[in-house]
Structures are given as structure tokens and as C-alpha cells.
Image 1 (tube, chains in turn purple, orange):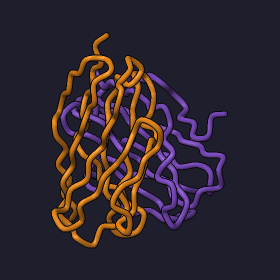
Image 2 (cartoon, each protein chain N blue to C red):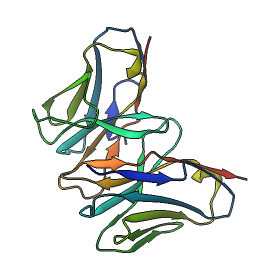
Image 3 (tube, one colour):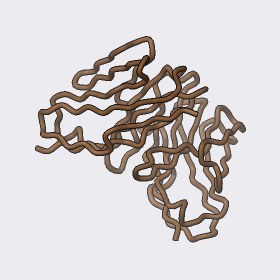
Length: 113
Length: 111
């Protein structure tokens, strides 16, 4: 019973490519989030969305953008991929207000070469 | 913004022993503190959480304690088993629905 689905588990892209990471949730959650996970740095928030067509910058938004055209889908876009964006990307969703934490997807491991 | 520090970064225990992971935070207004477990190849999963009006919460072998005055909270795992081996993250709710995460603790349970 997968609730947050990330479209790819592994992705290899070339420097300068435009990259789309897709995330879909089936729990009718209002809030969706994109984090990147790097060893020793924990989870850092890139962007989040409280509702359809709404987005807010997180702590490390540079080089990224997002799109939320439908409630269930939240896309992360790397405008021009660079090697320092090689990382694990995690999507999460939650109710508003926050009652029982986030539900995370399994992650997308992106390698930029 | 909120600053969350998590210690230790790695923890190795013998099967059957207890494990304790501690997190400190900076914003005294924070009132929701979840803990996540991440197994290899999976996303983090919520294992226990606590709100600021409660000092301790237990769920079988895991417990969380909160000291609001000192601004720290801890995860306690008793009678550790090999399947407890994972990365554990603490988190603190910032404004709205944002969670700020600690850097994570790699727990290894040796059998």
C-alpha cells in the first residue's frame, strides 16, 4: 500500500540537463515537501507547498524549482543539473495541521555526471 | 530559524542492550517532536512522536522523553534487536508544517 510514490529510484543525468523528479501521493494531503539527503547533513528542505499552485522556498532552493498543478502531484525541477546536485531526493506529504508527521516516498538517487 | 543538533552520529550496541539518541533544539516555541527510522533503500518512517504538553511517551520497546526547559528530547530503544539497525532522525516542527531534521544517527545492533 504505497502512499507516496516517487517516479524513479535511480536516475543518471548529464551536467546542464533539465531534470524532472515526480512525486504523487494518494492520501489527499494538503502539504507536500522536497528534501535532499546527504551524509552527515541530514534532510534539508528544498521547497514545499501548502496547496495547489502554492510554493515556498525551503532552506536550499538555489538551482531548483517546483510545480504543483494538482493536489496529489509535486514535481521538483533541476533547471540545469550540476554535479553538486548529486544526492538522494525525498518527497513527503502531510495533513494540515501537522497531526502525525510526514509520509515519505522511497527516494530518488540522482547522479549528475 | 530552528537549529536541531543530534548526537551521537553513530552508535553501536550489543543485541539486548539499550540505545539512546539525543537531540537539542533552539526555538522554545516548538511543540511537536517526531522521530523517524530509515532502513536501507527506503524513505524515513515515523516511529514515535511527542508534543510539548507531554513529558514522555512509550510504544513497546521505544520511548521518547522531552525536556522543554532544557530544549532537548531523546529516543530510547530497549532490548535492541538486529532489525533496529537503521538511521534515526529527530525532527522539530517549525512554523506552519515545516519540520527541521537532525543530521541522523546510524545505529548498529551487533548480534
